[in-house]
Image (cartoon, rainbow, N blue to C red; front, side):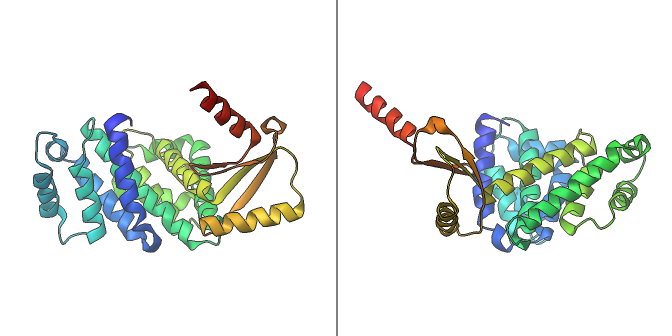
Length: 271
């Protein structure tokens, strides 16, 4: 996904973030259900992504389709998607799928403590793919078009005993609505989203020299206070940065290295 579609997805994800602290799996299931509705009706999907159609008219169509049938959050998210612009109809469907998987990841994240909920989810998805990869008959059964969605879902649930509720939602979506992919490939995509969520809890620290225990303790306390959660800190020594530290948490970078300050100074002198 690129260009205008990427920007529209980013806007929808920003809206979704405000809903995630108290999100439940039912929101993800609603989003996946709406995705199934759109995928089954190409004309409807085109109407909802038609750039020539007024955004308010598309939002009204969403309200007519799902109003009163899903939660307010689900309706608002889909309305925000149709009000945005998309490079092609498929991109909006992909965005809706991403939002659903993000909700599942956030529910696992909220279970905590720390990374534990996300790690359990990733482990369940990984185990599912391992089982599928090891059995060609299972692969064929999960992709059998003549088999009902219920049958494929029932088989998938038996493959990994003890799978958590969050993983069950994503695996069910992958085997019943892979949207042109192999189920295991879609599960891999979901794992990548979970991994991205995990990065919010990991601080990658680069330092010009090893940090003492006391320095690591102070850094841990400062970062936990800054981000409002118990981060996992990975410290790597990199002599090329000369001095100071560089901290990366998700997409955010805090850089106080000598190398960066020298680069900024050279840039200013060159102007």
